[in-house]
Length: 146
Image 1 (tube, helix red, strand yellow):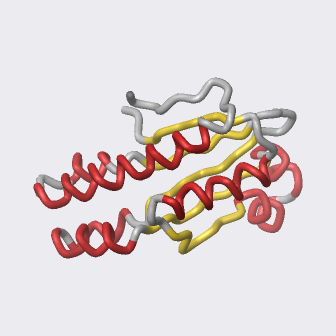
Image 2 (tube, rainbow, N blue to C red):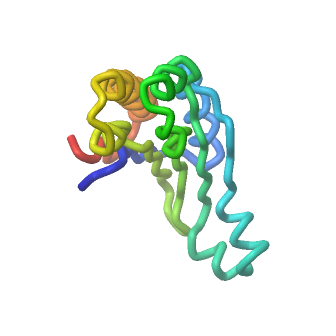
């Protein structure tokens, strides 16, 4: 089962992170959390582990309106929020990969029609954000699970 939407862009890592933030903001998402996996691995596991993963950040994106609707329909969904978006580049690569959680995974865990509506809206917005990145000259762009 595919659980992310993915686009690969011919951008340097730092520029891809910056553009991802902007694309998410254009779709009403703010970044609540940021986990620098490389820095964490360097600190906790050593530089070899960090080098193996390459540049890797997890952005916890939240659209407050969608989150409010989802939590009103099913409070337990907070365990699945925020929507994680990964920006990563393996060592030696010249392209950066951006992956967003597929909100439809929430629908598979909940039978609520309200949750389906929120997931559909979030899905459209996340896909639009990735599409914007892909439109910046992406090579090999595509969404998983389509």
